[in-house]
Image (cartoon, rainbow, N blue to C red; front, side):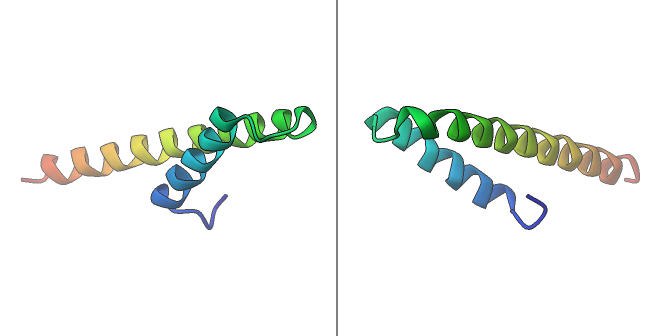
Length: 62
């Protein structure tokens, strides 16, 4: 996950969502897709939180 950018993570989430909506995933892979999606969501949330902190620090110095 370290090598992912926010944009890549979001693209993968969209791909997973499309698979789930299409119903093209087997029951066997459903659990893995949901776990991957949860990991990606947490990654994106952390990226957004870190970015928000950096922006706030940048504005504090003005």
